[in-house]
Amino acid sequence: MRGAMGHTFTNHLYHIVFSTKNRLPLIEANIREELYKYICGIARRCNGVVIGINGTSDHVHIFAQINPSVPVSDFVRMIKANSSKWVSEKFPAKRSFQWQAGYASFSVSESNSNAVKKYIQEQERHHRTQTFAEELKAFLERHGIRYDPEHYLD
Image 1: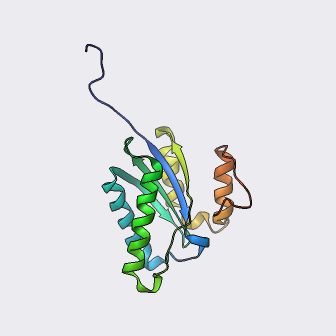
Image 2: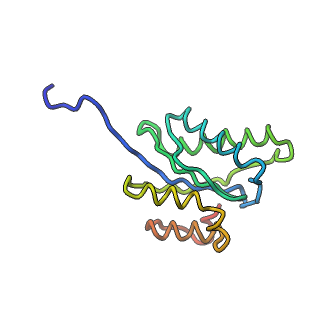
Image 3: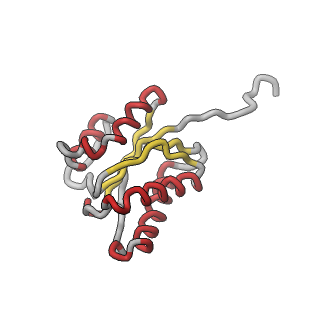
């Protein structure tokens, strides 16, 4: 058919944030780098690419390009399920490691991608003055997402 597009071109960028269950400080510095590498591997198996990843002892930020055939919910579910199992097996002292039930996901335009990468790279410095709860609340409000103030951290 003349005029039909022969290829599909996409650039689906997402800033994804989730915490450990009950925001326990379980992501200690000694496991963080390995955990992030493992998460990047899971993303690749889901036909995604992690552009940036960082966090603190109680949460992680992932900036990823996700294949449009993979729903964001499936992408996050695969990352959380596989990485929590891996942490529990790899680090016996963390056998009960779990992520929170929910997550936050925000679409990112290419024109804003450098700002998101920089924000994620500076997590340690950023969280000297703001808690995860305050950060998440600010993100939800900035993106116009309604939430229950009593349960948004569940």
